[in-house]
Image (cartoon, rainbow, N blue to C red; front, side, top):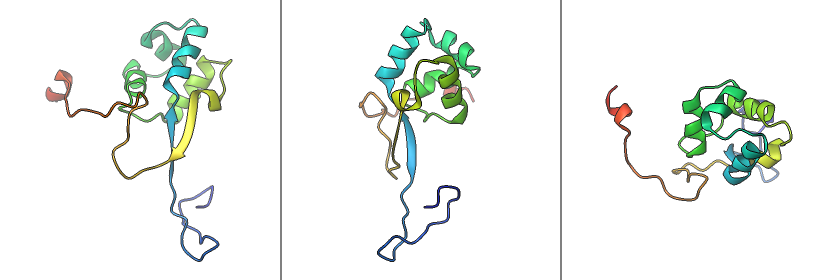
Length: 116
């Protein structure tokens, strides 16, 4: 894959390199960085990051992968941490992602999800 577009490029064997990557939160390191920064709640972290608290909650519980706003906000709110400390780049799998705590997700719905 080209670094700047999604056009597959041939690999050295004549096939296509179709690997995709995703960014995952290093949850325990992230929580430690929060504590070191004096951010002891999701609300305080969200405010420091400039994003919605529900986004913080969903990324921390593994139901949402961190996006650009989350990553940028985290690096700004946790200035002594690096990207490599807080996140990891992993090959994207086509199957169901496992949350950062390693426990498989259950098929439960929140009460707020049913009110829509």
